[in-house]
Amino acid sequence: MQTILGTGGAIGTALAKELIQYDSVMRLVSRYPQKVNETDELMPGNLMDKEFTERAVKGSSVAYLTVGLEYKSKVWKEQWPIIMKNVIDACKKHKIKLVFFDNAYMYDPNYLENLTEETSVRPVSKKGKVRTEIAQNLLSEIQSGNIEAMIVRSSDFYGPNIKNSVMIETVFLKLKEGKPAIWLGDPSTYHTMTYSSDAAKATALLGNTPDAYQQVWHLPTAREKVTGKQWVEMFAKELGKPSKFSTVSGKMVKIIGLFVSLFRELSDVMYQNENNYFFNCEKFMKRFPDFKITSPEEGVREVVKA
Image 1 (tube, rainbow, N blue to C red):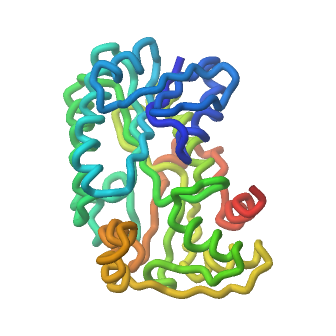
Image 2 (cartoon, one colour):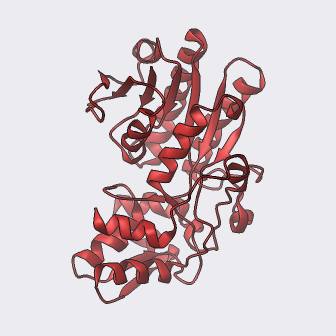
């Protein structure tokens, strides 16, 4: 049995569909879990509870931590360290492999044009500092030989039926409604995006590859350097809509954030949208050369089709 801690979100649901190829039973853990596969075992609960977390992972061969907390720095700071400690302790106690699904907020902003697993860590945002803390806690346990685990990292992601992707909300859905898209940041800079189905498929593959543990992996992400303007144009073309959009700069996001909580949270990481951003996955592709990465054109087509 393999367990997903944090199901129902963009990655957790897709991951459950992929893992059934490797194991006949999945345990899906969240506050309100729902079956993805017929044989799924559901366990509702809260990973902030240490005893519940131990019960949640017990009997598993691999646990995948894919929790998506509310997108607020305060919530992340209060809850992520506790959740990570509970999961690490539970996996150590029951000798269970751990796969942590992470993002790229901790990297040094000076190296956004080519982010690799070796890029220096220098978080400049509140959320980045939280992610750095919890990732380092896990890496310390790995380096000490206390746990068999890995960290898999994704760029900003998009994909079919995803609701918590900024690009889906501000570009795809706006154009679909016949309104101009909104691009947050500089539309002339490129920003590589991870396709959610690729991320789930690769996470399942890594979790079931014994020699992939004890290290960090960047999940497969298209190598095409697509600008914000080009992302809008691709969605508009696929939808058969005019390619119209407005731009909201980082400075404007900060001002709007004084009145709108979502923009206040987004202003924390806007530096990623105002500079060229390339998420390098060469390490993964060298290890798994036959993995087919979904191109931006294919990804956009699948989002619209869904």
